[in-house]
Length: 502
Image 1 (cartoon, one colour):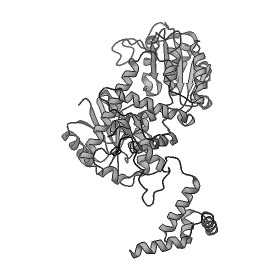
Image 2 (spheres, helix red, strand yellow):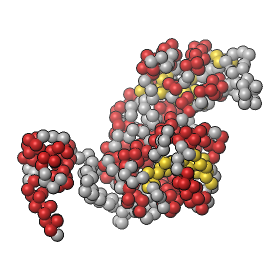
Image 3 (tube, one colour):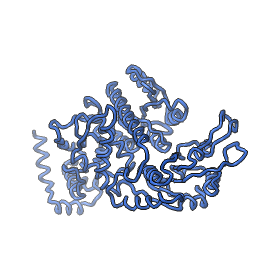
């Protein structure tokens, strides 16, 4: 196997157990005793050989969630399998929101761990193939933007006008909304379409290397500079330079960037003269740059230089009409990959669930969810069962026991027995309120309130004072709601007595 598995756990016994299990399965391993050590390992040269991570969530210092957030901020796209103890439902949901691929329950069986790692690597390989295919696909145009949403019409119209000019553009929007795709479409529709398109993630570069990476350096200009480096501005000469997450640039580098934008000149580190460059500059950020200017974290003069032509890309939750088209687009991309599973259908319930979800990670999160579901699906139809993280967040719970003991992989369940027929959603266990109805639509607050009141009456055996106290309402309010909803607590009491008698 190419690459090692990084095991991150503050418990030395647990680290050794995981190491022994993974080595038995033929994996090479690296060990980190906490979040700080894990991030340090990812930043070193050896970090490039890490294929997957097994990450404990409960650790002192930087915990598992902190590691996931730091990885996302630094653009480190390595699949992560998190470990959790029983009862860590909220933490598991948070981990999935922050990009974890899978989770195992401590103490995880070796086979469950093996399956989780294998699935994570399979998903990553498929996503890597898709990224390479996309890069080889040639010039990107506005026709490549998958949308049917009116909210995106304005974005495309603005971007098309921008493509006909050479002015600086600032693309704003949350992480994962497709800011780079918009930038590539602008470049691919303008006169520089055949020239280089160079991307720099400003948030993923260590502060002490930003200036060198952007503007280049001369040999011997600082410790470790064993040869000359031209820098991204020179690489993009004649074409387009895309500075992603420009709000993360250090203030001292912002000064030099301002000069490059104003005069078309850069100063390489250790250089004796300036270098002329001809670039089309497109910047992007998920931050509120104007607020950063007010907070003294971003130069005002640079802000107005970059913000000549702003384009705001809306989040996916504001363009839900695009979700079905994006899902099918990503399914087709998976199916076109070498050795990829042939998944060509998705159930109405699954599509409704995906359409109702808010997608905090936007299109990137949706793409990853479809890739994972397609890899882990055992049939030819994606159902709600293939999206356990999304389903868990919609319903507000994760069945840890079933996840651990289920045969095969721990994420996906078997496909429907009859092709093209989606399975019926399982009934919720006592103590769990379902967020979606049988058709995959969000239930009304009134329906949920009725169920909650019935559950409380049953749980506290008809003791109405305790029911009202636990629900956080007065007894008079409780009785008013009982009358409003037609709930008879005496009927519930009779049912309970019958159950006890049986």
